[in-house]
Length: 229
Image 1 (cartoon, rainbow, N blue to C red):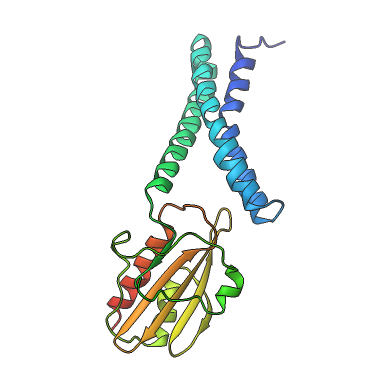
Image 2 (image 1 turned 90 degrees about the vertical axis):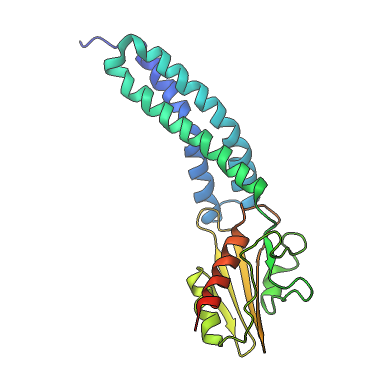
C-alpha cells in the first residue's frame, strides 16, 4: 500500500479553506442572478461581510498550508502555492474593491444640476429608490453636457454603446437601463435633448456605492455624443 505523504491531509484542508471565500462569492452571485435570494443577502451579507471575513481566514490558512508543505514540498508545494495565490488574489481583490467603492462618487451623476433630468417612465420602475442627490462634473469630471441639440439616433447609439438597453426614445429624450453582470444591480440613464444643449444623467437603482460606475458610464455617453458629427 502506498505510504501517505506526511501532513498531506492538513495541507489539503488548509488549501480548501483558502479557496472558501472566492467560492462563496461565486455562489452568492449566481444565487442572486437566479433570484434564489435578494441582493441584500447575496451581495451585502454573503459577499461583503461573510466572504470578506473568510478572505482573511483563507489567507492565513494558505500561509499555514505553505509552511506545512515544506516537509514534502515536491509533493505538496504546488497545492500550497496555488492556495497562496488564490487567497492572496481574493484578499487583494476585496481590498481593491472596498477602496474603489469608498473613493467613487455618488452613483447619481448629472450634467445639469440646476434642472436635473428626470427618468420619465423609468421612474415607475425606480419607485423613488437610488442614491442621494445628483453630483456633476466637480465629482465626475467626464460628465459634460453636449452644447448642441443632437439627433435622437445619436442618443440611442450612445446608450447602446455604453451597454444600456433602450427603454424609450423620442425627439427630446432617450432612456435606457443596464443590468450588472455579477449581482444584477441596475443603472438607468436618460439623455435629454434640447435646442443648444443635450444633458445626461446616470443613476443606480440602489443606495450602494459601485466604485463610480455611474460616473464611468456617464463619461462614456458624453464622450460618444461629443464625438458624434
